[in-house]
Image 1 (tube, rainbow, N blue to C red):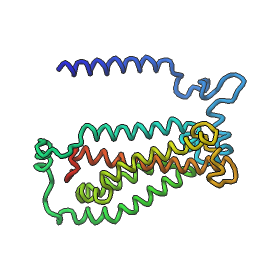
Image 2 (cartoon, helix red, strand yellow; image 1 turned 90 degrees about the vertical axis):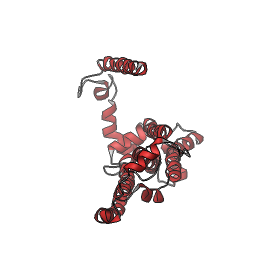
Image 3 (cartoon, one colour; image 1 turned 180 degrees about the horizontal axis):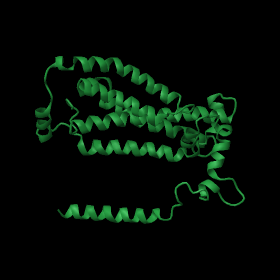
Image 4 (spheres, rainbow, N blue to C red; image 1 turned 45 degrees about the vertical axis):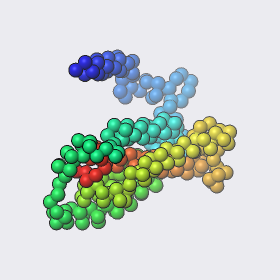
Length: 263
């Protein structure tokens, strides 16, 4: 009971501080805000992004150029936050080797077992649709810096395809294709891919995630195209982590950490 009181106080105090801080923000859509108007004698940040983004990056999608280049450092740590959320759920829920855990009995009692005949229509439909979904997810990832899409969106679609497979049959069917070991490794690799672009840039004497310096390694015509290709690379890293963590969260939540049977 006492822990609930402290938790409630912490939420109320933190929420109050955040709400107080919001009062200093400019009004929504204010044309005179620093982001819109800039400082006297210089171009505003938003105006610079709109007018100079394509020249700097050769990426038609303004959103992608901002997320993966101008504020790429922030986006990398957004990916780390997603990874940390998945690992936190894993640490709290995952049950390993404890046959006496009461959750195992509850999952076995609640498992739906009505024969495979009840899943023929849903299962067959999903087996046909899932490859199409995955192909579309790869398109969204690969084409995200030229049209709406990117690593986060494509990763969610790709992760959802494995969840659909688990729901249409059972979790074991999805785990045979995307095992716990596989999605853990892929989640880590995704972050390492993103960070590698920054580290290599530093080794070549530039700032972290300053993709233009990677031109000799990427065999591009200029630093602008190096930035474009690098953004595709980091989007692939984001997609790896998002796909793996999304499916990992579902697998652990749906089985109370047992990774058996599922919903």
